[in-house]
Image (cartoon, rainbow, N blue to C red):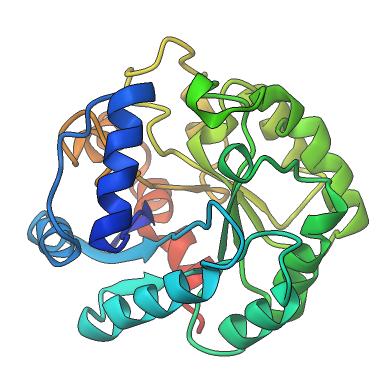
Length: 271
């Protein structure tokens, strides 16, 4: 089964605001469909499951985003819902407990958007919840893309060294670093032997779009620790460009199956 481990399905109003932000600060999003159309596009392309990753950009909206994501998953069983929380907000631990004790498959955190580093104590509740419920945290904590629109120097709230400090405090947490951690892919890869719960996803990192192209053989060297993901629909190119890039690597069939679905099924499929 093909599993896209990195999909963003937001309410229409928020999706429009996100597209506007990307237009101003990043790239022009090619795919501007509603949520249901997005799901159907991926299904038509052969994606059997997709992991929905909402993220809160301010306090007080996490519950509504989680409720929305749960409703999408109820309409579309192909969608595996993750929850979000704004670190440090009132009731954060309760939000995490309510979500992760139920049908949510993991947590999404975006260090650039939330302006918070992986080792910030406000994230301790997230790491504890991951360890408690054995569910992964997908945390954008690679330094790139370092876009001015985030309103923060991304290198002050990201990086492999800061994730290492967080995992030293919370060694039982399960973690997925998107985008192969660019542009510190080598540093994140070096952490893999030390932290069995650490994984990376390929999202936008192996398509040749960005100038800071990582060594894509990181996928070949670590087939049990890499997940296929796309960032769909917030893409400046065709939705299947990432899929074609993985297939073009000509991995051994068993390794390709792990990257394109097996690892995601292991991490997200147990709930």
